[in-house]
Image (cartoon, rainbow, N blue to C red; front, side, top):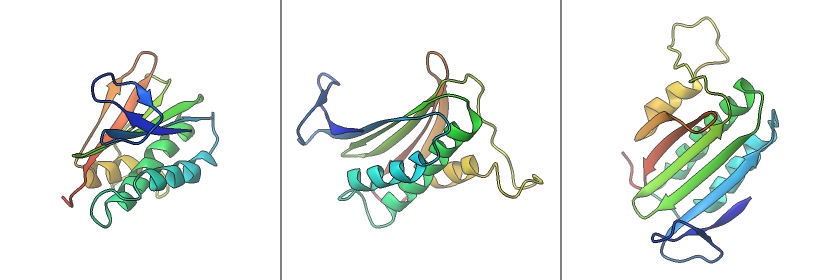
Length: 147
């Protein structure tokens, strides 16, 4: 795990906390579902003094959904990146499978799977999927203020 800051001018990681963005970056092992609560815990620490009440809990929930999707629906590692800036939070989970995730509606027969992206769509200020080299990155953003 790397928790540090990213300078606005270089975009490189620094080892001290400043007024610039704070970042968490974590490699998630293939099918390692123990990484889900660990990622939530690390994000909680990163967001300890961020946003209005309830915003960090929403961020944790959405992050766990993206991490779980990447570990369950791909057969490879994934990378979690969270960046906190004065205006908000951006979380991205990159995997190494080009297939785009499917947003499943409430009319599916499967009661236990397929609702994660619906939560992301409902609770995030914005979200999306972008191609990323070999694979894709699924991301969401939250403002520090309640929406």
